Image (cartoon, rainbow, N blue to C red):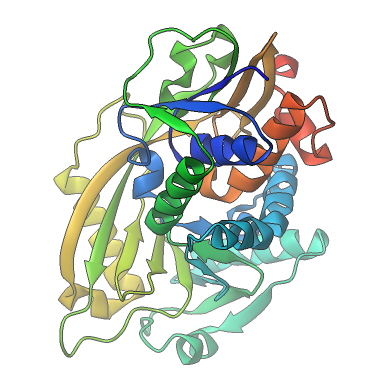
Length: 350
């Protein structure tokens, strides 16, 4: 059986490499720093429902199918001996003003029309569920079906599981594709490797990590999302007590500098949602590059003979890792891909 090359060692590349190796493939991953790209800086939300919006039904379908696969994906990693840190605490989306409340009403009605489970709550009910929320929170949505994962534990688990299965790692960046079967999972840099991926571009996002000091309110029990003056914000708790705060999102090419403006916007927005965060210790600031696509759909499928795409996952790389890996492994074996992945075929979007 020929060797498979995976270009890119983020959550998608590592998931593909591990799954392919489990199926008996000899795999090499090419990445100068495996597990240290955009995936290392992610919030870890596995939340297709609260990311949904009218007009993005295909994105919602692929996200929900991947979410359905996540418990099995995590269980198989754990059976390999590596815990990915999956949480089933759910998500709360909150509104601070009338415009945000209107946004939530539209989102709730849209999700109900699709048969999705959501529970509208008043501001008082939201604060009862999460006591640290601001008194300015006027309404919210509870989404019990959403999951979250500790992105760094996941990446470490995937790399260890891949190595256990015999995957080799070459710590360098490739300017051109190696011979043989290849999976392009190079995130924001994928467009440099194949002309059919020219719709993939970098989308900068800054993220902060904080932890409560002595006497501070503990972080929320579940992921909390909000839109503050039109800008999305999320707070994702970690088992060890840290809180991930994100994320800015803007076009900046391949710039990964953390800006004072980005940090200020995140902290000011978070304090309006969860005031106690003002007393937390700021332990990390970082910026990463999401692999954005024009229509927010990823590129998953064969580009040309023996060359496959697994990139352009936008905000949803962690969420879509299971279904992407399953689809690529199926393609390599000549098997049909999941129905939800058909719309992500790069050759149908030229």
